Length: 556
Image 1 (spheres, rainbow, N blue to C red):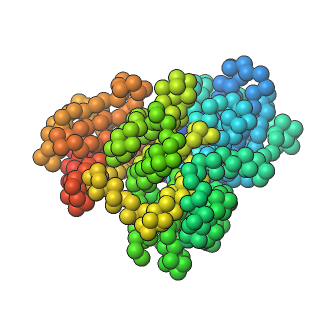
Image 2: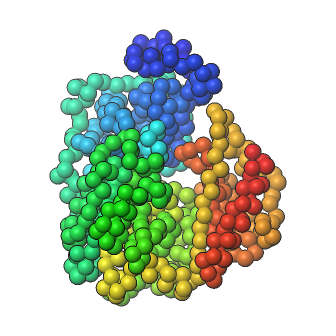
Image 3: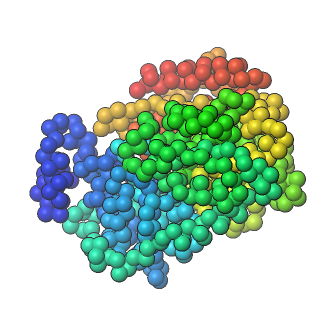
């Protein structure tokens, strides 16, 4: 499909055509129309704009038609789909467009009345007995992006097999002539609006994840500063903390404003410390104990803690280990830790978690990158009874306990990290003290993620070439350390499905993992090391990262 096809189509609106007519850069035109946005297990994600490789109402309709075809092929009686969205530009419009296509294909729809956290969408899929869910979000990406996530009937993101079916159907379906849709005025007959009353069902399940209510009562005056970064956590995160018993919650007023341009931050990503600048100022004014930040769709949570008057950043790996240790420690002390308790983490997530599990007699399982694979393990445990899921997390600030949802949940994580802070406060300690204690007991673990950016409309080809070069020219040593093993997940190993991942284990136990991003034009390198002290561990991580990127720079 070409720019001329769009300009000549009677389906395309005049505003979109004006945008296309204004384009003069041939490379940009080629980039916008060089095929389709790829539909993978994370659905669609791309910059907003006109064209087949952009996020717009036509690409949203197109993907929804293919999803509707998949749903109808299952021949499920009374199949329903629930739709949610975040605060991004055009998110509401895209959500309504998806609803109109589903209704035109004979499906009934639940549609949230306004933005909601992604985990509430995951919860709603199973709670309402839906066959699928759609979430319009680009998670923590910059303001130029939007996206389209699909969930299946178990509340987890779409499986690779079903994602392949949807993408294959998109390739076979004309974006304009073969997409069914109706106007919103007609679609409303088949749309049930979910309002704030529905939140009660979700919040009740989140609150059930508390371990010790008495701790919160004793530390109810602990000061918590919260920012939603202009996104979907703005209402439910403070609400769940208040209902749990915390009385001293201070929000960042400028960032409580819902705005898809995220005007007060360079990036609405809780992984980026600079986004917390205003929150730290407010925390200092109130002598706050901790600062919590959630991304625009409120599935990821970032944390900064007060360490004797200094506000220190806690990484996603460290947050996960603090939560894991608190859950296992507390449940064991209370006598309600299952004998077959099992945590689940991704292969790019810290190995400190394994040591924590071993201490409390719990198991740990590794899965591929992406919370959907943690969700799959949850289902597997439930079906087989082999383990009891106790906690799941990934280094990219995603955490979950319980089985009410099958995706990471910042509302839950905000609640439980606050409870953990109360636990340590009772002992005259901070979360920073708890982290230091973990390192003293198990060794200092340092993790570093390096993004190898790819530019141009051929970025995908460059990413594939880099991975191919690493396979055809195996690395044997890095920074003076021998590589003992390189696991290639391309054909599926360790009981995991195929994935374009290389996993290197070095002679000192350090691990490096490299994989192409599934949502952005970059290859991600994960460096995981440990040492007796922090300076040694950080120096080792820096050295290994530089040595590896020198190889990749030469290959690109």
